[in-house]
Image (cartoon, rainbow, N blue to C red; front, side, top):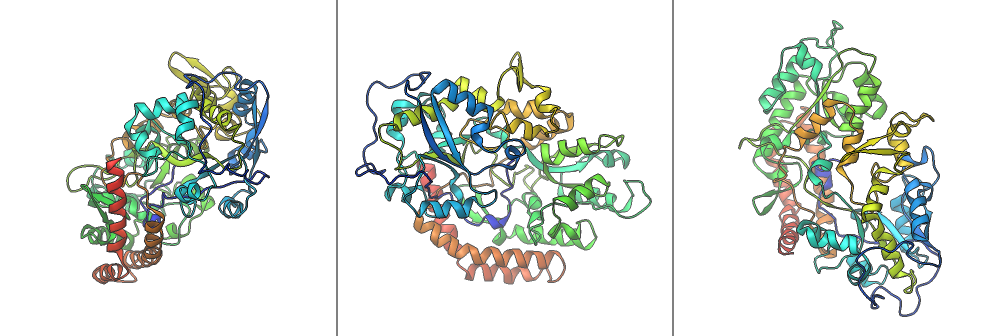
Length: 548
């Protein structure tokens, strides 16, 4: 679900973003985003149902999802949206770009005046930022409309200081109804380091807690034939979707008190690869690689190759999620007696703490729905109410779990998914089945509920992994700061060459093509590329965030 942020390829955190969409009408004169929002009348304390007595349709643009397209054509066919239309009197007509082409299609879309009423997008992928889009009259500021017509989102913002800081631009502007994770730690700690627990048990080893213990475990996996086939074919640590370099090994960087990109040292922004501890990281990883503890194909593995290695008892450890990295293989290996996985926290750093390589405390993600300047000013207040419904108690349950009695049932405070989801009669996997009912398994403008994760984890190993990954500290990671347009432009100019150079050089050092002593030259080169200036703009963004 969530992707790792430890890799240096993330370079600058370009949470500055841009927006736009796809409707079919030119913005009315005076109806641009700089015009006053239509907020009048008494402030709502709850969303009336139906919202309007005269049904209308919202033109809505967002990327599709492969889990959904396994059984449906578009988001309008999702059970939650169909029920929402029935309750609110407002229907969303979805337009989806071809799968995998959302960035290109989004950029084409915002270059025109053919905007929809609403766009849902990962604004971290947009160029220029929502600030620029508001300034140019492409999307509208939502603060006044939320204050008047969005009682549910307003309540969340006012009751949670973290949400208030993360949902606003630096000037206090709110521009979207976001994907939120108020139960942040539980929902974000769904990915981490995974080992074959049955291999550990067979060899009489405990779960590794330090980097030295990791080395000993991987060495034993390599030399003591834990898969029992009499061949030295075990791959102690491997990975999937190879990026063509060894940046996946940055998952072990926190054991040295650093991460593989921009990081925090107290209240100061730093860049992990130029910190002295990075050299120790390179030395250790080079030793692992030389001794065959790292799968040499980790650079190029795709999903099919990785599945083969796990299901053929070759993979000893890797990074994965409770569903894609554990649940999937428990199902695929259900006929193999004793197959067992375990998830462990990041190896302890020199200060004795376990650090995450990505921020586990982020509550407001960069995905969200914005209202464009093409939306009729007369309908803006209804659109806002329609959006706010997702954060109401009824909308929350609907978009997290689907239809009660069909996709889920309640057992006290717990949610239990039905066989329609877990043992789908049409042969859909659980995530495909749930995608036809709710947004929680994908992404969308909701407060994602941790109970959906609990309801889908069927194995104690998954539950233990989630609990173990929650023990990691996010102190090394940056909060969701925002770079200005100029800062983003400057950082991108620097980091595009820095990242390429680091990825190539760290890969060459770890793989033995260059000596570890090359690190000193690497630092000098990175500094000559302007890394100090990139750190400076990130520090400025962090300082603004801290003052919110």
